[in-house]
Length: 382
Image 1 (cartoon, rainbow, N blue to C red):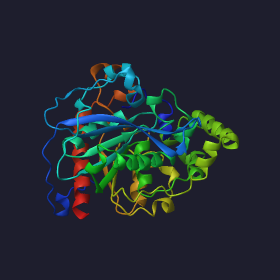
Image 2 (cartoon, rainbow, N blue to C red):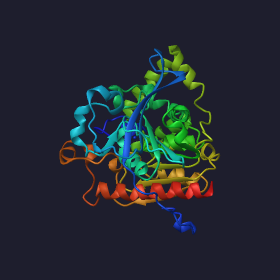
Image 3 (cartoon, rainbow, N blue to C red):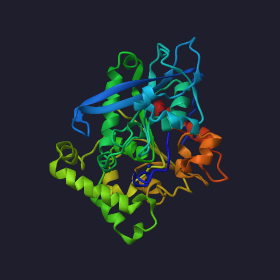
């Protein structure tokens, strides 16, 4: 769920079907969708306050056992760590799920998709996609990225500047899911993929093997070519965050440990394919930094995106990732991939407003089918 178009969101936030490959995809029967949460933690990393292990608050969608009714999901103050401020619920269209229902147990294991939200947002942003995939037999999990999520009530410069921590969140969440007593035995280890929006799109590309290059990003944003590029805006806020991070690098052991891993690959070989929606921060990834990717990658972006403009972001990734497929959606903006909004949301929030040519619900239905077709085509080759 993408909330107000926070200023920091600008810092980080071809349809290849199996039929086109001469293969026919069989869609599973629709299932009632269950939804639950897990308060995972990564004991190998500290939280940004250095008070304990890194939190991995995760939302899970899945085929629910028969006999459990679906009801419109409503966030509450009790589950704010997963779903954020419940007063924002009135701005977004509800989706009906069987909350905390047991999963459907079958003889065949379920494919798993890990979701990564945009900068300053939270996993609930992509509930529309998680719900759709779960209704088609998938288990889907979305982690809230610590320090860079609206669910925590405050944003930290470490959370969105140290971008390589986000793929590590996904990797640790995957490990926890495979060991989970309820879902672990139901997950197909071979059919595992990832999808994300905005900074989340960049996160899953890092899972595929892309290497983040801070110097390349800073060089670009200091160049004349970056003028008017939303990738480098708002410049004053970015400079303040970078300055704060420089201070922390001198004294903060958690930041110091993170920086030591900044130029490394964060590839997870368990992830077999990735789908990126309006990926951001393209100038931080050089041709060399994208050259190691050797799994299927598909990218979709709108040509009206002024937060992560396609030329320096989606098109850049597609150009240098071997075999990547790029789909361009006319008139679509960056936030079209966020939650569907109520009339009140469209009236109140910038992030809910699309151009008059765009029907957000229709675009998301189109993207859902594209995502499903993409992953199903990958599984056929496994």
